Length: 299
Length: 295
Image (cartoon, rainbow over all chains, first blue to last red; front, side, top):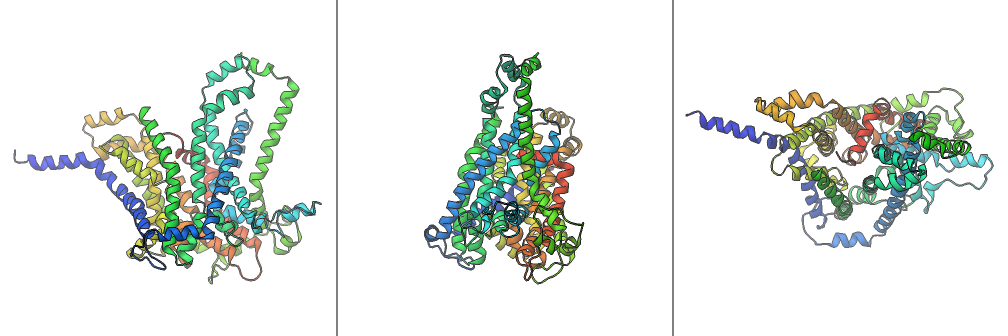
């Protein structure tokens, strides 16, 4: 009888074991993600310059942020880059997935070629494409030597074209990923419906447009959400391919944040730009994750 | 029957043309994807005269590996002319512990969240999951402060901590989605037999886990190896990971620009993750799509 209380205590620990096991990881996430978000949010309202300073000055850093031409350029670039990157990657990925779905011999081999860019760092992608787009020794010279004298491919050094150089390299890297998503979705479409439709005399073309692609709407959604969040986070590709230049013509918000925080001693403005980026990502991801998690509960 | 219906509909010659067209498009895209790899490898094997005088697309005259040697052990990065070698080992000693810690913690967390559902488990998972998508710009500043306070700024240990924490969100997602598919009855039966939390994990769950462990290890290794933002933000000089060192090598060369060395450096930096991809591509793809396809 006397031994009961300690047993109970051990029991209680045993019962709480799942929580205890989850605790360290969850605590780390709470501190390093959510705690840090609050810290950055606070700093974005202070007069921090070179070092963090905890004196609040309200929303002035945000006002400064939105008055800076460099930031407007970064936002405008993000819209162009994000839209084209997501749109072209989804189209190319979808096209490749449908083509690979045609009982192709050596499908695995071709798939490996299409997807390998996803395994390497954006820094390497940027370095490689920068060399290809080198105005004097790159592809431009090759095509000119072939006889097309006016051909220009020096996008990375052109104010108006540098952002498209980023789109090109980013699409190169990510369209294989979109293809992999679509291909696995194509393979999970109910084969009986397709068989029934083709027995009814529907052409393969019609089957794709009317039956298969519409049934893949959730995957389109996923691909677009994941790619847009990649676009907002893009940083290394810009560093390696254009350096944000010429000038700051091809800078993106992530590069702006880094520049302000580590090079220009404008910590409060850097923090404000990070908060704007977080808000943008949250606006896209939270509804998506919410619907994904809810969907799971119903299954 | 269905096959007959399918193949008798289009006339043979039009089917043939379609087939040729299909292959044409597939090959054009394959060339586009392979072009940078071909150019990088080709350039790294040429000498500078050949690069300046010849065409970007021409094959190298001979297999000349001197640029590789130079990039690996002689090229100057900042003021140190050590080549990429020390930075390569920095990345290795950062990636291995980072992979192990985040995978272990992710497995335990995913197991507890699915097989021992407690009140609030779903909220905990949702909060962890959002950690996958947070733009890291929002944590860089406080992280730099925290690393400074612990005294591990500009060390590999600092980067190990950073990658373990921010990798945890992904590994938890992988293991959670995988363990959801293991029938709860297995765990319940073992509980009735008197097995506890860790016994069940060790005896029942772990033996079923190798596929998802491989996915998690490969994903984390690729992510950590390819990271640039954290490396550039928290390290300088000799503590830099290879991606940062490679970028410095390419962008700060004074004097003659050595394109062949640049390309060799890119190749050395890409080699480990490319090898992983070539030998375990299937698992790599599974990790890639896990974040977007319902578990």
